[in-house]
Image (tube, rainbow, N blue to C red):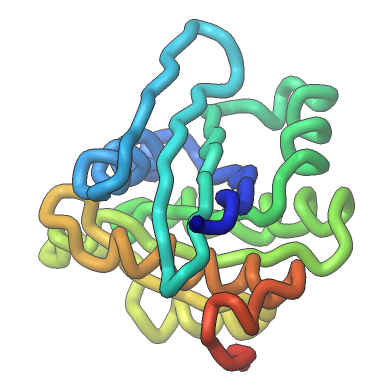
Length: 185
């Protein structure tokens, strides 16, 4: 008999046009486990995805919304209900990159030491890139969070992002032994 899935409420934050929706769609489409998609014209949009690492299954409830910071009460509730947050920016958009510290400060004002990952999206459009890898890594180091670059178009690092996120959640909530991983960083 397998153990019950660990529910991992996950919030994906970033500026408009950073690629939140497409990143989540790609993850849900390529995952081998059952997926459901709930679309409603309310905040937030939610995807549900099951994923396993070793013998531990995670049920990701992934929420995202654009401009949600304007709705302070909803924003605070989503952060507080999350086990961790993925902060994304577009590698093609300097403004979305410059907003990252704002998002991280908002998250850390609501959660104590949450699992966080910084993600640069649209890696497949490297010829249009505005943010260098070194610049993104420097920001991630300053904000004390891991960094990964992804492409929802070709799938680069999308599953790896959620595997890393599972490991970080496992470490934070004492599941490391069941995940069979060592502490990162």
